[in-house]
Image 1 (tube, one colour):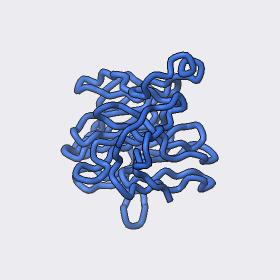
Image 2: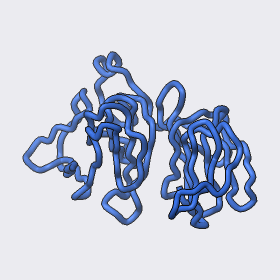
Image 3: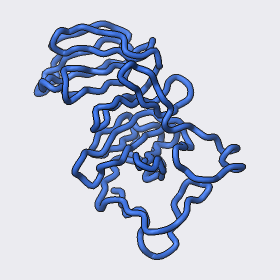
Image 4: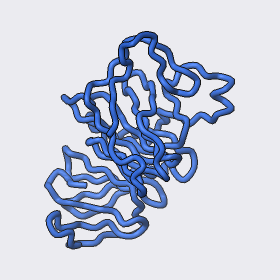
Length: 231
């Protein structure tokens, strides 16, 4: 991730936070240890949010100092366009949470199992069929504005979320295992390239319809309810 100063940072899966040369990939500096994979950069300040074994820490890329932020353990992290930090719960749960300025986590998208869905299909708002792993937000002013994208550990799935209504729809699947990351592009990669990249050609539109218990959207007419194509 690039910080607000243009420095390029990476995590190493349980070891150090490293500063890299963006051209050569050479490691320029190493910091701390026990940093897991999750990392998000605040574009408005020299702050990185880092997932650790004990929760979330912040790292000031100017002073090079770590500070505890939250005791909630997470896998993926992302900063929304409004500057709010979001994450995915780990090692258990897989819910999508939103942090306040004091590091308190609020569950925004819960994981609902198949048994519960069968007896209460209802709306898909605020519900995920599978645990979340990583998240990314659409850029403001683009066709992805107001959307969040969630990758899952199961089946290489990619879920699109309307941030206003919290309605969800699966837009990609069939990967051999979990996607390893998301960026506002939006890329959804899996090691065997079953799902490589989902590309939005038109802004999503809901013409009319209703949600099925499976979570798939059923249009009531021939107008495309979710005008998406993947390639």
